[in-house]
Length: 360
Image (tube, rainbow, N blue to C red; front, side):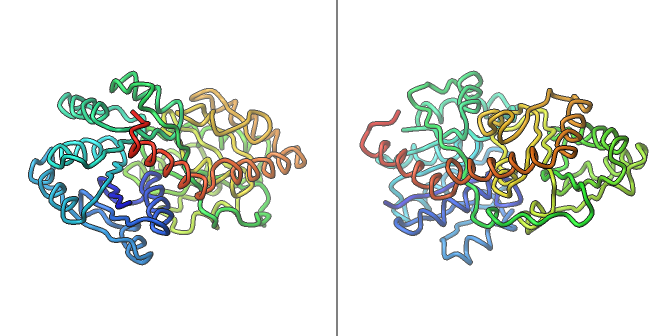
């Protein structure tokens, strides 16, 4: 099968990492071409090329561009693509418009993020794109429900394929040299509610003054969050790392992983923390409750409740056996349900159903 994977950009992000993992996995048996709808190519564009995956760049000039639609259609025709799999809502829109010009080319859409689309035109096109897809891959049931509510996704179209975790995350966890080290990874933007993270850190320090905290990720809120950290008296306890290339090593240095988000699709960082053998304490954002087995592989706390987050973290810090058992169970669960081979295999099943007419 000749598969085209379409995405808006290849910068830092969970969907971008998932596209890379899928492209490399598919390339072992199928012909794969990635189409990037912008010139945002670092870090995953270079890594795709280094892995031998063909990459086509169709640069953006801002806004919905019919020229980009035509360029994408020409590229798909030239590469003789049989099936197009679009990542994220905007890519699904462009891929649908392009495949309308290419009779016989199948479209598989995707719903991977619960971010609301503000444009009425884009919402309309996304809805039509899903209607015109042979299948729509959702990375959790929560994501499928969101797409059904906001974009009219029909139940028979939705195929649940959970994200996959790279083998590099299944490494032996090293014991942090500085005692209790708690961290998170993600873009520094409002959805992550890192104000809750900082407030919980302040509460943890009251019971465990030796604790240290790591926030990895870039974003426009960094200066604001650093200021807030200082105001809370956390300047010496909280480290802002910026974008981290080797997330696996960073996770291996932690004692616990926190996710304080107000909304998500299905967060890769939770799966990566599980694979790294970390106990996870998270808000029930998006598909997160589908990833964690409450009380066995992780714990959920209410949105915005810094006190509950800190309380659970202190309980884990005081109970080394509980934390160790949760981390080991999380790694086993990640290996069984969320490895890259599982994700690639399940995705190929959706493709095969779409080709046979069994999906959608």
